[in-house]
Structure formats: structure tokens, C-alpha cells
Amino acid sequence: MILEIAQLPVMAGEESAFEAAFDEAQKIIAAQPGYRSHELVRGADAGNGSQYLLLVRWDSVAAHDPGFRQSAGYQQWRALLHRFYEPGIAVAHFATVCGALRD
Image (tube, rainbow, N blue to C red; front, side, top):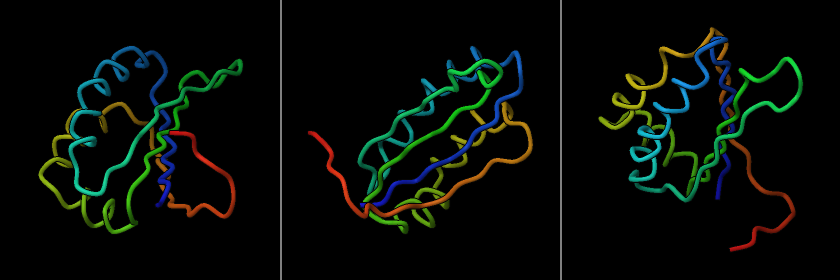
């Protein structure tokens, strides 16, 4: 299993609109082949409330890219969400070295 971590810098003042759009967009990603789970978290420290991390678990890197990233669903995802981002989105994939997940 692979963990995708996407840093999403949302424009200040657009947080509520972004979260509403994400509520719709999460249905798209959850329907993708190779998808396992996701979590959207928001900065909780003073001054970083516009910073979000999207954590998505995939069966493999290929399930995300090219899988999801080259799908029609991704075009819908982009249309819903990418208008909220400041420049500088960062995405990386990680494999678990140690630890445990509870079901």
C-alpha cells in the first residue's frame, strides 16, 4: 500500500468554499480503482489555517499516477478543487517502513 501526501495551500478566505467543494470531490476519488482511504486535514496552528494536507492510501503508485491522474474523474476533481490553490502544490508517495493501521 502507498500513501500519497498532497500539500494544498488554499487561498486565504476560501477555506469554507474549498471544504464544501472537497465534500463533493471526495466521492470521485473514493470511486477510483486502487483507492483505499483518504483524509483531509487542516492546519491547526495560528497562521496556517489555509494549509491542508490530503492523505490518500492507494494500492500502488500506479493506481494514483497514471491511474487516477489520467482518468475522466481527475478532470472533474481538478474542476472542483484546483481553483482554490495558491501556487506550489506538492505531491509525493510514501511506502510504510514500520507501524500499524487499525481497521
